[in-house]
Image 1 (cartoon, rainbow, N blue to C red):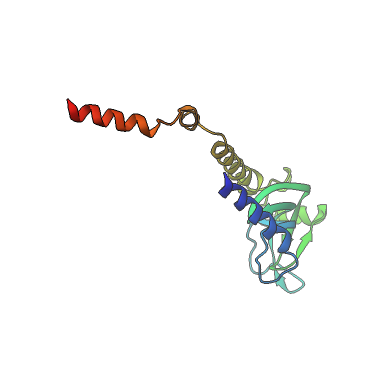
Image 2: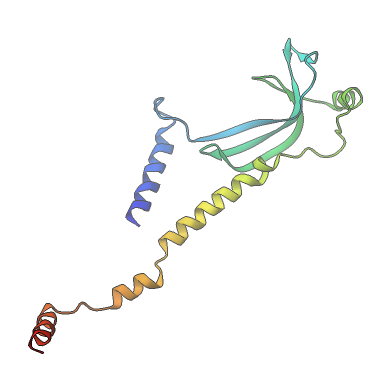
Amino acid sequence: MKKTLLSLALLAVCLFVANSVSAIPIFYSNGMKFKTLHELPDSVEVNGQHVDFGVSFDQFSIMWIPMWNYGELNYAVASDDTVYGLDEEELTYLQEAYGIDTEKAPQIPFWDRIGGKIIWGALALLIIWGIIPGKKDEEEEERPEVPSAWNKESEGSQEEA
């Protein structure tokens, strides 16, 4: 129990200190994410950089495991460092030129949508399971100790017999 509380306190301190000290890695992220759904040919460029087609969304994650998504889901194209939103005309062009289905609503990949919630839920259950005492612990606490005088008497009676 003490180790669990100490570990949680240490993690909390690291999370709060991570923003102010550059030597500690950042354990959480919050902001826009882009997931590639279709890789476009190398000839497709925006501002001189190759882009791929995908979905952009806002996400909060801890230790690189997604916790929840918020904001709007939008189709977008992105280079290595920039995400560009698409209007209806550009979506129609991508659908006709590259056969990308843009008529259905954009969806986040499984890991970003549900996978992280499964991991964090399992971790929470393990912590709760570890904190709740079992029947064996309760039995050991209820059983009184045998006085040492009783042990000596029983040893002596066995030697005489």
